[in-house]
Length: 131
Image (cartoon, rainbow, N blue to C red; front, side):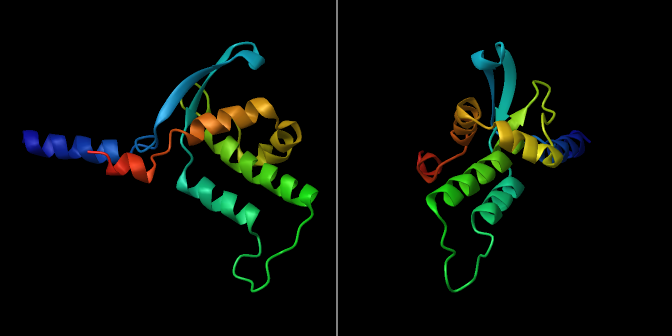
């Protein structure tokens, strides 16, 4: 009976929405010392990020962009990840997909620093290989 209960608990843990994500609580001085939770990006966010960066994936000839177009595309892709990684302290999303245009309009250095911290939560191949 105890084994069955532990299996059910393991199932619940494995299927919990935030179970597979590393998180970190951060105070943001630029936002009146607000406290936020950052998590590593989801697989879905990485797919969307890739789609923004390479909308014509699979075509023979790579798309030629000006430096300004490339910078705007990079910012748009980063906003996709930022929306995914920024959470309230209780773990709920701060922004939704509908907020993307507004976030993109105001995305700046503090947003980029928070995204960088969230990306640092991601496991690297070197981390996995450590005994």
